[in-house]
Image 1 (cartoon, rainbow, N blue to C red):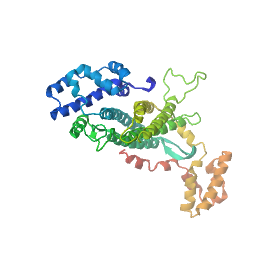
Image 2 (image 1 turned 135 degrees about the vertical axis):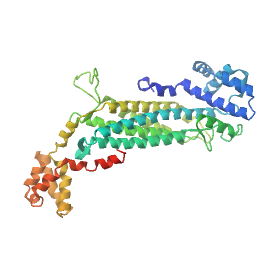
Image 3 (image 1 turned 180 degrees about the horizontal axis):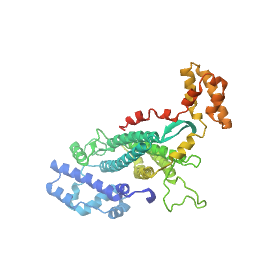
Image 4 (image 1 turned 30 degrees about the vertical axis):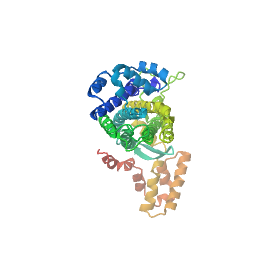
Length: 431
């Protein structure tokens, strides 16, 4: 991932230094297990633990000759350790180290993403509390429907974020697996107890069965989960983009001092960050597809997945980390305009109460739904076309006035009616 979108903490997880450090953790842990079995002499283990080290630069130099990163790594470590290095990687295959260490990196990245998701949930909940009764028009098909509140919109996002937290927790559990089972997963050259020791020490679960690799459905689950989280963020961002439109302007990104919106038009305040989030969600979906393509490998293993994973895991976790960081900041500083919400509520001259008129004719006065719909729609269409007040049209319609009294019609046009169950919804969140 390019530096522009890489935050330091997540970037460090995918550094070459951290990758090789985790490789070394796996190798040393395996040596510890072999020492307990008497395979590795105690003095050799002591020497390995004291001396084992590497430099990324030296590994790169060796790999330029060997064209094999694991051999380059082992050769480099061996230069530090000396003769006892012969016990490192004993009975193991490259993927024992690669896949177990990759699981550690993914788990580390996943926990950082969980932290970000919980921060997002908290800021959304704060906005929901603040705007519990901030009434606004609800829109279906982009068209004014009936009133809702901005707080309920935020609660909707809270609930979706909580589902994403659970999804990610599950995906982290699935990927938190290791394997030290040899060339085709049969433990022919290494005792299963080594795998048990390594995984227990590193906070992983041993795979119940493996081939030369951990099976890639685990990795696909993790990256598709990130893609789903990205979809949620895109959904939230798209809503803000729409609410920031000049003809709506009910909420907008914070526009900081000194910021410029356009090189040509000084008046512009563009939703550039939420647009960026919408775009970056596409990267996550594309990488998730690549992860699913990686599931079908030949027999006990081929290497077609390896090159893909070197890109998609750093890129996806770095991308989502950046998206979450930015969106939390957007929501913390979001500008909300309740007065504009009120103005927009009145743009259709009362049409948003059409369903209440319909229900009053059917439930209170026994009209068939078809007849009631005809009466209401007739006046609604006139309101659409002429801009006349919907309530006045109903009062002036002899057929409607013969059924509904003036008092009944006036009572129907009450915005507060639509808020009567808001508190019931909030109670589901302990509010």
